[in-house]
Length: 387
Ligand SMILES: [Zn+2]
Image 1: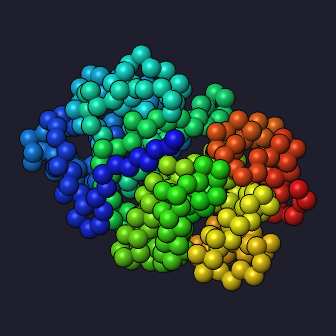
Image 2: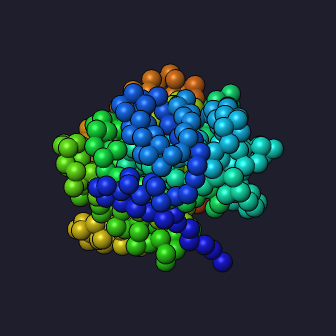
Image 3: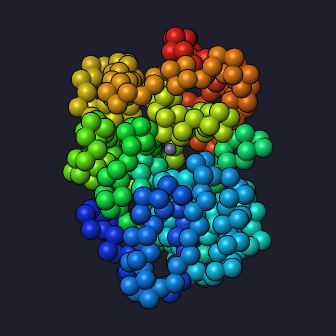
């Protein structure tokens, strides 16, 4: 038995106007300070105030949000008592807001204990709307929550089906001005979700089509978005791709690129999309040895010339690295600016974080400690190793 969960999704130009369709009288907007500065928060507030709603803003969510950020936000919510929570931001903001929502409804819960098994019983106090301002994490369409434990330098992959938003608003207006590097990094996160949702051990009939289409949309539209941020048609398709991939991997799982990417993000704070983008081709090479047929379906769907199934991994990784070069992203950890000494000092932690990540064990081929060590070495400098 398994489930398929989705928020109600409204997408395309003018989608924001649907914010007024969710009932409420007191809205708490969770966001980051940059989105206040560029006026997006004011725009949402004005829309809510035309409905006579009172608003409160939590604008202190940092990239890779901490447990403390979630606790502080929940305390603010307990004071204000919203019946509507609006997460306006990228994956960090949306994930943090989901965590705050859980603690607001149930102040006794330890955020690190949020899991897919236990019932939480949400929506007794508030509904939840997600408005993404990046096109990548797909958090607006998933029940995942990724938080960071800074003292242990590791990311926590949490989640529960109940934290899926009630409404996701994909309005391209909010990603029109996304900077080039964020466009590239978050776009690669979408690609990693699509590839891993399609190839992980939890892949399933409901998610396959979503993952395939999301991957194709990234190849078709990410370079256009990168070259011309004002290309609203490309932005719209890429924003759709992020949510589609979110549904795809969110109702399946991710895999090794995410396990290693979370490890790197927790230990060395490399942005999530950049980290998984770097790892993706290497982990395909590693995992495809266990299930070439699956990667062949994906490669052929993308229109790649695949001769035999044995050539699939090389064909797919070449296409991904070609895409990464088009959007000027690093192909190795060294190119991402990680110092050799820092890398070696962190290697034990990277390996143990990746071993313990919930996504790693969803790979079609699960690496042991020695293989992970070799994989990290391989990704550091890009020099081929044998597995
Ligand atoms: Zn991701």
